[in-house]
Image (cartoon, rainbow, N blue to C red):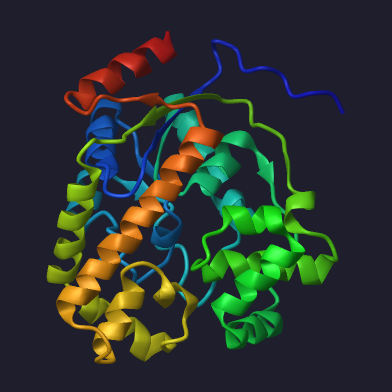
Length: 305
């Protein structure tokens, strides 16, 4: 097979709005979608799951009535979605938007998922291994990530030490196939033109602190209690930012203020990792933030040429 053809000027345009958490992507995506008469295609890995609304800062029902969203609430949180499965769902959603409008709008901060869609990553075709996942969960995330560092240091460097879902998936691929995930991943870029727009506000720390408090005030602890009662406290997604601290609060091991402080700290650390990923893996046009909508529209119109 030859190399895929370079997208030409008449090729449909995929607009990607990316940036670290709490940078304002949701608000800007809504405004862009309204202007362009598009749906918003979500690329936030935790928003793929049902019942995880407050802790993931998922678009509210009002926002979803204002602008249709896709790639939200795909599965219950105890049924993990692999990167390959996400691509199989998201790829046709993008193509459908391109067929209808000649353009599609992706918005989210999950860099690997964005890269998978726009860069055509080909993740390993290893189905979920429930028994292995149960064993890995029983071992604990600290042990699992240490194993991954030994077996696949390249994957371990990309996966946060607290990210149990992706750590388990990388080990699952390794044990099921005998080959590391890193060695199996290739790429065949889709025939789209991609315009990446980035948000990286100077006041991100303040935004994170403000949003963290809003999550707790808005019912994060109550949402966590419902998820714990339905799926158990060992649910991997309940170890992620916000939910993990809310679990500790519910167990009486953290005060509310301490939980908020730790969630803010973990979110800032995550935002730092996101910024590093976007700097190394993407080449967005960074929006100034003062008039991001106008700036974004100008860039999109130029991309439509």
